[in-house]
Image 1 (tube, rainbow, N blue to C red):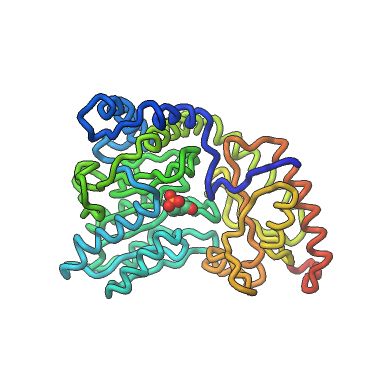
Image 2: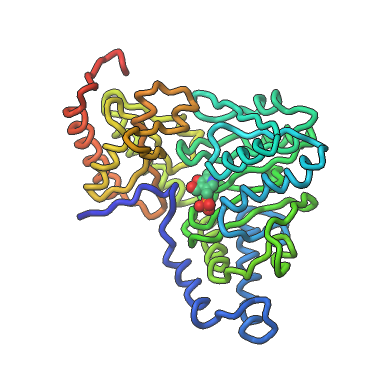
Length: 393
Ligand SMILES: Cc1ncc(COP(=O)(O)O)c(C=O)c1O
């Protein structure tokens, strides 16, 4: 059976070139970089190269602006909790701002802040699922310590006006963190131009390995370390360095930058072809305008077709997609981003996310169009609640 992977916002295949770059660091060059013997020191040039690849990829000033972490969940938690220890616990400030549509690794960290008595503002999003910069300005207060807003949304692919938000934060003396996980490899990310203070990223979202990520920290914007130990990463994040992971992430970043220009155009063309074809189905909706989305993502709702049921049909035909919702006992949960944009309840349950990568082919897309259309026909024919009404369009 044909296999089509359209769940690249969840994770990506490791690029074979990345795997090749990592291979020697398991059984040959396996020393601990902190050891003084040759096994350890042999890793140093490779680590230096990877750090160069990383800071060049996001246009940071140099490698000192980057700290390696285990994943973006760690990076997000680190910034949010560190701001608590640095600026809130001592009573200096007591307010932070984020959005309703952040990844759970941001939202859960803010929930923790709330449990510590911190006031958190969850900004509402507009009908396209983004927060406009002026909204951020309206909610900044004297005691606001941090604004954390994602660069691109994992469900809809919508790109937030990061540069404008960073500027507003700067003007108001507020720290600005962005979760850049879904932006890297999909759009140009230039942390200096954007003027952000902190940015989280994760290798497995741009064809690197799992279990390694990073945090960009603008020079002069310090953070309290949360992991204490052997003083790795300039004392900011202790723990023996994941050498294969770092080498892989560096290579993946360089490839992502290299392919961005050419591959993003190809991915966009395939995404648009898929979207156009699926929108031919009556009563279907896609969240957010195309030109404001990263080029690989579609969040589509097909009225009368439960998202989970669609996933099931797609999976049976070898196609991997996602709903962003979880199955809780007998209740099917609605997609949280669809709820945040105020979609009607029956549509929020139908959302299906299709996310492409530079490895997606034209054949994959043709096959997906065929399978998807057949699945809609089948599922609508057995849906007791769906009756096509022209006024629904
Ligand atoms: C926007 C966003 N932030 C953070 C994460 C968490 O990344 P990691 O798996 O590296 O912890 C994800 C992963 O789905 C994501 O999409």
